[in-house]
Image (tube, rainbow over all chains, first blue to last red):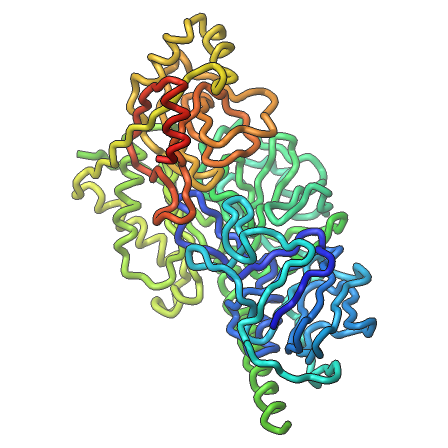
Length: 325
Length: 240
């Protein structure tokens, strides 16, 4: 009862909402890059939000469902097909046994999340199922997926699904993403930026460079300068911390960031903008917009409330569907 | 008795806050940070995810939703800022906590210390003199970062302090002991790295199956005990 990897993708790993409580020992939290997408993928199946999901980049894995299962996809649209038939994003799908899921086209976004009902049977380490490649723990054998890996479902039941079926509702996620506008709060070294560089950050666009990964996004844009030379001893950094590198370019630290860093911190991406940033691909252009910590908090609480409403609606529809079946 | 010091408090995200004394590498300031670390761990506030001490700062990562449930209308950031000021003010009355004393065997054999000869030449010292200076000091683990279990220790004597290599190595073996400026550290994993490598320890600095998985913790006091190549291999093979 599970899936088999027919062909691995560029980097497919299991992630949950992160491994917290060990950053003082240098152990990074990791976790999903796009928490909204992971939450929605789980909600469509009635799973808890923290249930680990499979995060895939393009090209993504080709996956055989050895047994039937209810699944969902959220986040990036990579042209998913099951047995050659297009399947929808943000919809619960009943998948028959021996069905092959593949992704044929990079249409939109940077990472897709695959969830199955009741989740996957994978490894926990220090309270999280997120894959830590450095430590080789968590997720599936502490590593990215390889050809022929078999990942069991938590749900041992055979659902006996004969035909590929989309359940008749779609989770609407548009409101959780902005086109390319990334809100941020000022970092401690923001005032040390030259005035012209502050203006550049707030008005010009930045391109996500090829060296970007789950650890961080290197940005290409107009050179930014500090008004005085600074040397900082390392201190804690965060998912979304925007640092100014010695080459006058920015890096935004992402989910697999190291726990500490010493480069000047010009800002920190607002949590509400992280899903948008997580779905920005190499070559995409983004813009920054400064906001206050108070506004960032209010926006986050609003976003969470809206997300909770979507989760509730998904659960309601799911219960209703199986009650009437 | 500790002296009060000035500090800044600032956000490092909308769900993380830092208290920062600023300045340089200082045992006294780092001792205050470790005291704060222990004090903050006792907080009865729901929603604290991580408390991360560093050289002269300490950061808290928190769940905004959970904090807000406990505090009503004010912003979570303002609430935690007040709590941090309160904790920092009360440090004066607390006793100074000292870290664990750890002795780590290290082998300075040139086969395990690719930068030792050049570093000695750079400082116009013999290799034995560099080893003596490196072993003479009890180092403080100021913080852990960069890699799981990578301890930033100091303060390395000025006579052997050496800047990072201009071109980092792509592969530094696990257990390598390095110098970067006035810091010394040990790589728990094979990794890319730019520190000047002057020794290697047979001790495993990270074991995922142990609780906690890191051999060193922030605030520990570390001294290095030189061992020969034979003992190095014996200890390494016995997996002490």
